[in-house]
Image: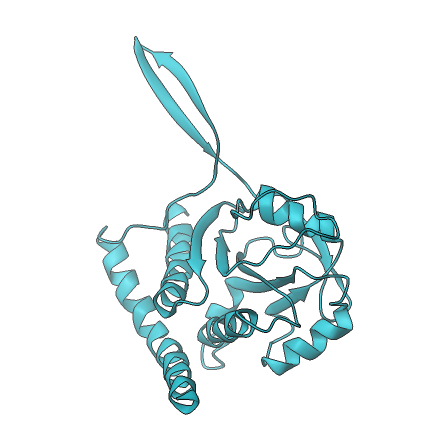
Length: 238
């Protein structure tokens, strides 16, 4: 049974890696014809209303994710917005001692990394459009040295996939109030703990454009497709 599960995950990774270029082409063709819907916006901050010519009009203001500065697995201080300006970002949350969902989340994030790896045959490569970020929810244990070992275990490209640690209160506030992930109340204290299977996709302007079940193969593939769509959206706006 374990061997069957392993073969299934290997096949999924192979399919994602091989079919993404084809998906990129097909999505591009359909997008140019106006037949593809771009990922929608999430997490509303407020709705402004005004009366124009006697008609009430509503303008939805979506949340832009604020910056956060943490330490990556190489011991470098990095900033979500300043260090990664112009890039889309996929985030997930884990801890290195996790006995349940975290290893699978990391395996699926690795498949996304593989799908968007640099193609040496092309000048413009998909690896420049997105950054993958895994943030520990147990920073008191997960030092950057521990994260480096974990990152190597999952074959992380240290430039393209960051594993981040820092102040627990800062991280937990970011998860709850900047990313809007439902976790229940908490203050980031010693007894507070967040465990979520969500992948979150941010566009280059730091609007939330997708929530995905990082344990679900279909959702992970949709995340990959949505990254491509955000790239096409950017080109269309130009």
